[in-house]
Image (tube, rainbow, N blue to C red; front, side):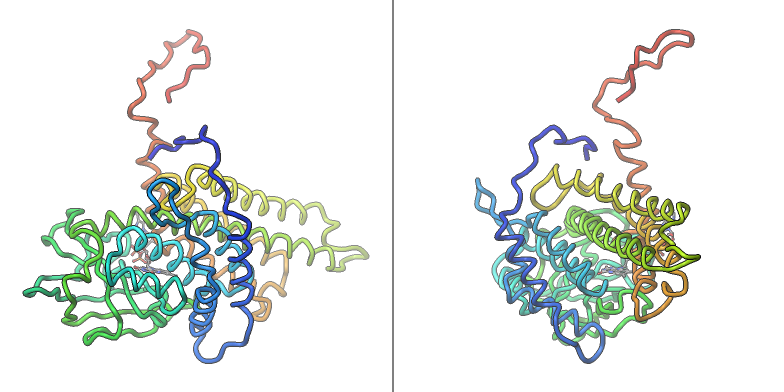
Length: 411
Ligand SMILES: Cc1cc2nc3c(=O)[nH]c(=O)nc-3n(C[C@H](O)[C@H](O)[C@H](O)COP(=O)(O)OP(=O)(O)OC[C@H]3O[C@@H](n4cnc5c(N)ncnc54)[C@H](O)[C@@H]3O)c2cc1C
């Protein structure tokens, strides 16, 4: 990646207003109504309604030169930020996996029948999950994956188990990453395969979780699941490469999402503090209280600034991987810190279930784990140009002691 790539380029054309308005209208219409049944049924209803209203298709844009379809990052921002302040976190997470990962990945790779599956998802007729993390194996180490996809005549046979799969409880399809190559850790040993959940040998059970309860998180087991050869998505041996390319979009979506909920909660907290009577005035009259909230607001603004900077570099998915890793490394700690301040400043009111603020803080813990932990992101940043500099640039000798450096710096 190039941390400074394209910074001087003009910003890409913004999403046409009609597109943004259509996405917002689709979300607003979808989040009404009282759901029954388990919490993830609400996510199913919302995703279906957004798709039916054209909200997911409105996130797509067409390349002016080759006519290919891709995900407009502006559109993704509108979708995620609207959902972030109108729906429970788990619904937004399920939408993130659809819109920021499955749709752009399949828009590039799907062929034939797979294209029809993409259309079903875009139109809200089906939900798709993406399963990378193997059960019982550290998610931070995908190269240790034990789930296998082996040839059997003209078919594939899938065996293994995935855990913490977002949307598994409401999915019609699971896009699975499995080992098609040797037992070792080489990057090219893994492939993507599209699995309809109704096939014999596929079992799904809800995951016990204290966070993102509406996301339909599930554990998925595959026992001798027979798939046709055409179920393979993209090229054999490219599975992890495809995933890593497109998970950058999901990481950018995390920045959109964190900005929206952080900003919303800081403003709600400011309003609450102004209403809260204490010693003949309001809590807001206390400068120490105001400064705590100002610090939280600055954290949110920094996340927003990095998010918008990435958006200026790229109009369609996927965004640059290096900067999105830096963004993801920042989002978890900054967001939990900002929401922690909001909870604290609400006193006991911040600890109710009805207010939802404490649950939001708990849900925000997932930002530092799902889709790659904060530590894994920091490791990526440590190996990037941001830390090491541009390897192509000529090294500039450090100034000798006692001599003027004339402001030169190693790029
Ligand atoms: C809400 C949620 C949704 C998810 N959705 C999906 C999904 O849709 N599809 C899917 O495939 N997976 C999903 N996951 C799984 C997720 O990708 C993994 O949880 C994640 O990759 C981390 O793996 P792990 O939980 O096994 O933690 P581990 O890899 O076991 O790591 C445990 C902890 O060790 C520390 N650690 C790990 N590596 C390092 C390191 N290099 N340096 C320092 N410390 C380190 C970190 O603190 C880390 O949190 C989801 C998880 C959550 C919580």
